[in-house]
Length: 366
Image 1 (tube, rainbow, N blue to C red):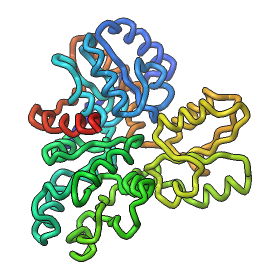
Image 2 (cartoon, rainbow, N blue to C red):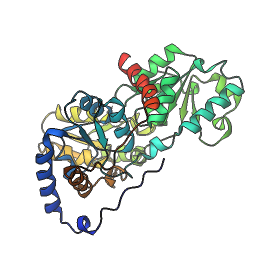
Image 3 (tube, rainbow, N blue to C red):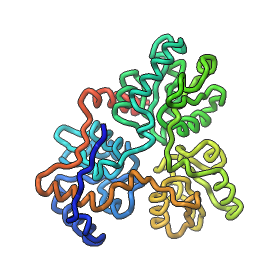
């Protein structure tokens, strides 16, 4: 479904930055008893400053679900994050997205139609006797429909912090694992578990049998959907080598959405929360080059002035879809709430939500 963002109009577009921020602050105070603002780490600072809760996508959705006395949950993130919040929200709670075009290209790379077709092809050529032989695992960066597909087949969601644990569970449970939508999180997790490269196969979207032979598919234990994060693909092995030549004492830390050839030569790798903790717990004067979204890196610079912190790549690596959410969009949303009008609500239909929550619960059980 394509969501169409309403035009805010000249009244809002003519406002200056300071006035927008001041009006958001006043609106937030006015609506405080009924409002919860969530901000992902990759949001710009002008939005991040208004957050009641901050974190990665699933952490925010879970923490918001534990707060039942706020009717309106504004998720400053992207569409799949707001869907997860709606799935976990309590009765009567409404989840809103500041800008409806704030999506995730990686999540969009694995549609439920394309994944269903892949399963049909695998069944048709006899790679598996039935669907239970293939355990699906989806990264939390996926649509509610994909999470429902996984939940219906007794698979699990994973995050960038528990990908290895969930993948190990799936390998123990079935003959094969289908991991989507992020190839690189899947490949890095498989490598960490010691799965041989020849047992890990890439499934290329739009190609018959994912561009593989029947024999190759039979040998494989893990199939990786060829999705990726456009931001983390910008980090290259040469960036790591250049920093090490320039600053021999520097520590390189990479997000697991980065390609394997970057992660394999970094000093550390992990989720946004892992990156934040590593920098926070490091000694004063330590030097870091970080391979993740620039807003998080810039925030770490501000929060830790006693440390030398750099973006690993020489050019800005920004999540442009996340950046669709601008302060003016948040102000417009809050102004409408003050008038009793609910805009940009994200709703997951009950049947999809019922199946999707099964995949989330499976992850928590693991």
